[in-house]
Length: 82
Image (cartoon, rainbow, N blue to C red):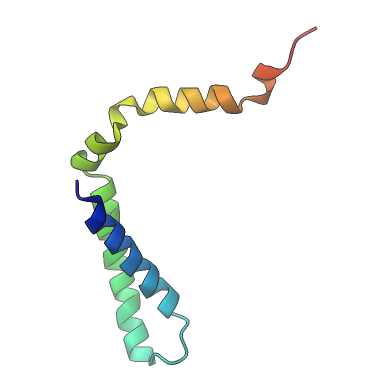
């Protein structure tokens, strides 16, 4: 998994999204960029959902991670019962 490429793609996505409200860019270009935004989002989501990325982040342990977070953020579990 090449995180540099993913990061650069996210930066491009942010630029496209931020440029949508730029009054100096003509409407035809904005329309093209809106289409690009959809495609870039699709590409980013595809990379994030790939088996390669899931393996990179250790997704197989996601259930355990969710349970650990739930235990840490459960306010009731920290209260003493009387």
